[in-house]
Amino acid sequence: MKDFRTLKVWHKAHELVLDVYRATSDFPKAEVYGLTGQIRRSCASIPANIAEGCGRAGGAELARFLQIAMASACETEYHLLLARDLGYLAVPDYERLVAKVTEVKRMLTSFMQTLREDKGSALDAIPDQPHAATTER
Image (cartoon, rainbow, N blue to C red; front, side, top):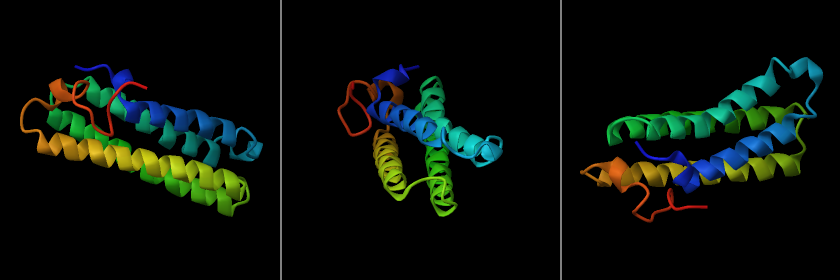
């Protein structure tokens, strides 16, 4: 079990969630149980799954949760597009948030690649081996 807070990818994903919450605070009240809730849930699922994967016993389980985090990032990307197209999210805000989602997706991809390459105990290697997904903030 490793501390997810040592992962740079977790920090970036957490910052994304905070930004999405701020950006969606002005969405129409009629969307509070619709798009607002959905985009917040999918986005919060990214760092939550990274954290849950770090609490698991092995690298294969961690990789599984990283894949779930990736799927949530893709879902968030779509919800941002929908919010933009509905006029709830200004184009500059959309572009800024999508750039952050893209960065998190790249970091997740790099992290998963590192896990695939590490045939030993991947969880033991996480905080000590420098790569795009790890290192302290």
